[in-house]
Image (cartoon, rainbow, N blue to C red; front, side, top):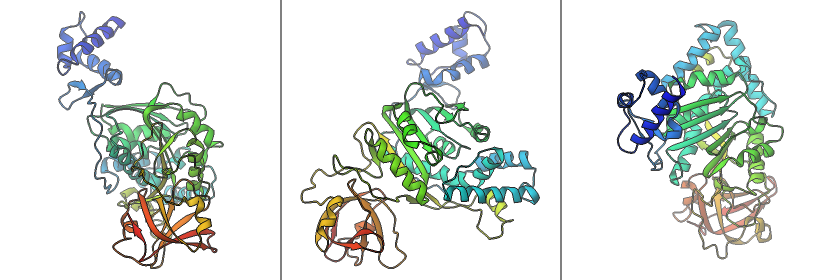
Length: 460
């Protein structure tokens, strides 16, 4: 097709799209030269994002809706069978039909062990094809689920548009990418840009073959440091990347400049202590310019936390996918190679002042967490964000809390449950709570403050 033919196609599409659904057969009738229907369709699809057009099930094209994506009642049961089949197909192509048996199975299991060890010890992993497949077997399901829960928090604020330009930096084998595409409605229009230098990019491309025509995939084989973004993006995602960068704060700062005025930057790391704390350090550096939407909302202006803050969210467990069951059968301990836990540390950052939960304007007489050291033995009123699920192994529930001013970790400890204070038990991770009448104690063993919740405490 020559340039004139392409220009005629696009000119007719631009004219018709606001009048009626664009029909490829109708477009053909208006062209001055003969162009087959397939070539016309490909030209429209190739330019669909710029044109703002989504393809319907009947093959016609209509303008993408300007209505934001509605939040879902997300409950991820597991990885859909279509993704499982594609991953197992890749494993069979690489190792044979019995990929989980014999030497190949032993090699995969040893690679998974090594990857887990390296993460725990904050050491880098080289993502060649074999390591990428081992990583996919163990980690893909958890990230597939987690990113959907995180996206739902953005959509709850009415902040997730149907036309999305996404940049997935260090996308790996595509667990988050699959989760994002599955979360979005069919009438969403997505330009999905992947930055991944390793062999994992080839696996991602295969796994993404089931995407709809309204998701337009571009893959760039650059490192996070080398890639040169262009324009602005509605979502910039760095999932399981920060812990592998030499200077994560500078890389995140670089990409923050390409987040649109109404977009979000999402940082995600494993819940392990080193990676989770590392994410908070990077979050604190970028929060000097961007606003934290969730979960560690800053409740006091001109305050910066400096506590350790090992904070992560625990989401519902998922079903064990068949590829994990198969590789686990050859392990020394049952369950060594199954990973049903969905728990991550994350941060959502924006340029606007939106937060997931509204910050109460009336904070009169509330004590900042940076000041609780002066209130030992006294009862105080505080406003704080719930930053953990129950951390206690005994009968007294224990929750990490923060308000953006904390210098030392503070925990709410429930020693007496009452109807007036049970809100701390029921509140979601990241929820803002008002605690009245908490008794401040110092926990010398943990080097932290305990805010004791008892029958005299009221929580809203």
